[in-house]
Image (cartoon, rainbow, N blue to C red; front, top):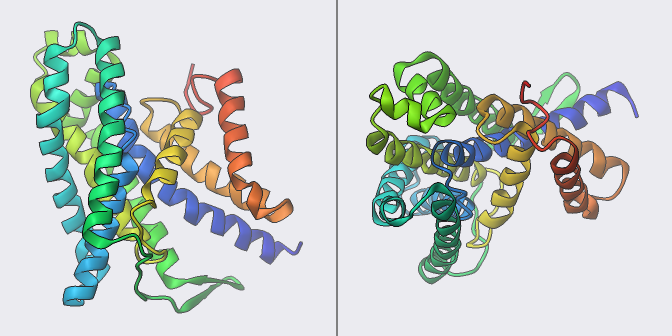
Length: 292
């Protein structure tokens, strides 16, 4: 393999990994802060993709215009979902373990509800549109312009979330709540405000990911579930509750998949990902990028 081919392979993996990271960050934020393992996360990604496709088909809107719209709409849906389900569960659950188990069951129900709702509204056919599909040459390698745009925007949103969590007063409150919920409440951090807000932000990020994916891939009601599974693998690699770890884990998994599929067989992609998932759980259950 030539150096140019190797660089093209690595770049392709990083592009995929950028999307993985963005999806995983939203899910990791929800679990790290509230212990909500939202199995329906990918279905809300799918809603963001369908909203973008529908706006493009009906009004000719650029998907770039739909990036902030998808974030706001999915964030609003997240606030509503939290108010109707998880806030009630938090009040009625005797302890955190019971809340986590009940939340998992509710998210399973949400997954099937959103899937079937999308199928009822848009049907089960594959949908798509052409947007910036022209090839762009970079250092002798060629990439579709829409995939490069997807990668750049995914990294920007991922980096923005990490900066907000590390540098702002709101972010410091979120991190304090992640590290010690009881201690955070004792120093006056308003958990009743932060929980729904961050759940909404998590779904907003999934909407952005869906919007970006619709530029390069087809859209269907079943597209979200694989991204939920991938996000769980990424979070396991990076460490539950670690935002920087989720970013690094997403990029790493994208590269590993790209290299693995090149030297083996594309059909072994899932086997490779699940093998890494199991190995990390057994040997580094806290994640590869978590400082001890």
